[in-house]
Image (tube, rainbow, N blue to C red):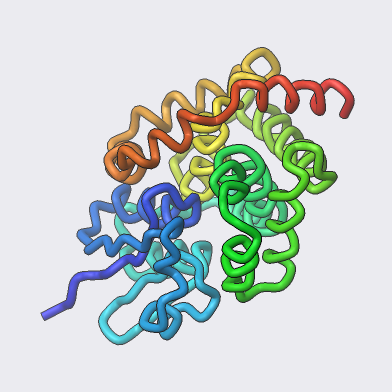
Length: 267
């Protein structure tokens, strides 16, 4: 008897959402094991045995443990072939991989910096110095630890955040250019590219920032609206939101959008 997949995830984790979108798009049953990232569950020894990087998601398939969201996406698509989430056309398949690589290489750290500078910064600053140091020290990756420390200290004034806004602006502009001619990011069918990119555009929406591109990117808004209308969207995103999540994102200072608009105007 095949054991049900277990996905160790987080309610609002963009990387966990990627995988949930793919699983629900394929109609694959799985057990969701929530890791409360704000409470520090990812640092528990039992979880670190599964994922020493102290991040989500982690997929457990019987005795197999798969980490890294993009790796998990390919694993799921190869293990469960229907419906396929990689296009048949080789050029479109290449485009899927390019979008996924872009998310991993530049967009993910940029959205992370922007999120921590807006939604997460007030709670961090409310901690005393010892608590702040402890919170940062538990992050295994030195570069990630240093990035968060800078963002928490300097907020939207940090050069990291300014550069992050520029990365995101380039992403939206490039998406718009592609979506002028196609329904989806890599051709005419929903693919892993949508699974990979949707969580980041949705994060901009949650932070109250997506509207900054409303005039310049109408096709991105069309694409996002259609993505929100798919069955896998609420199952992967909306249904997972807790009251604390809604309070967190609903509490983002409206001035953040004003400051980010200023960065975009000078980019």
